[in-house]
Length: 467
Ligand code: BGP
Image (cartoon, rainbow, N blue to C red; front, side):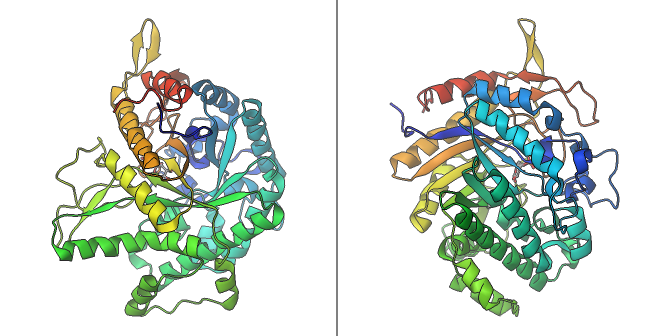
């Protein structure tokens, strides 16, 4: 017996800047990631520096066929990847795209097609062209909407006949906490005026809705989703003040999906803006554009947090944290592990929006140790298997609760460079890549123990899960 419906999509998710490498190959321009050698842990550099692991990544740009063959061996029915914006428009504001960049994704899609793997494409995953960031201050500038529209249209026209599922922005709500990585905003966070931040958010929301409209005009069969960082928030105590603090924290994140699904700003967000004294530049055209709503809602889920009216012990988190939950264990990087939170999130999102849901990221970053078993290098990552099993059991519960879930893509099915810390030692993969934080390594790929476990799980459509 399995809770997962026939046709449930199983796979993995990556982002161009974290695995492709080849950062200057075939006409690619620089993206913000090329000057973020420390992720969000340190400041960006003025020029690319040799210590940036993303420049070579795991050399997926040249090894994509080998990697996709491994995904096929795992039994993937879906693979989520992102298109590097600066491969297609090297500066971001050109009139015409870079053909060599487009051709790379043609080849990638050929390979997926050969293996019968459905692509799920993120249009913008933390890789704004650097020129748009330095010259326009990223999404603070309204002109970014037009550049993004041109980029999205280029992708839909070129790949729309072979890519059905599209995501407009990775973790769009993370711009609140990581304005450079998420919104390409070059102004340092401490100096960024709140009015500019909310104006940037507005531009992204309009661009996202506009891309949805363009996709549907080109082919009504295309499915466009928003993508948010989901982090369920629990009250630290049962006091109404703490529950209210949770409501406010939730609103800050849910607002993004509320706009994407309902096509207008929610009242609580208008109140926040009013109380902050922020008057956004919202045109009538913007209002009309926002009514082009998404077909499905996708999200990443790694952890939950607590919230309280009067502070508490701040914990680590995925781009943003909250108060540490005294009842939960944490990963080596301090992200609190909470499988039940995934069931809660699925139910809340389904109840609130009634749109099909897609879990497009979930995973455990850990220090893996390469060992030899019967002469073959591998990693005995039982901790990753346990994390995966426990989260998927909760997905099964949510499906049994009546939630419509389209699929599940594990974050980083192959080891990639971490987004927040830019390390390779923070590994998520079922496939180990021999590359270290100092850049050394052969780049060879090895199957971890979790590889066989996930393969069997997919083959049984979730039947091998243990409650
Ligand atoms: C999400 C990002 C991914 C990713 C993942 C894991 O926030 O969408 O790009 O990397 O988190 O985070 P990290 O790589 O920082 O461990």
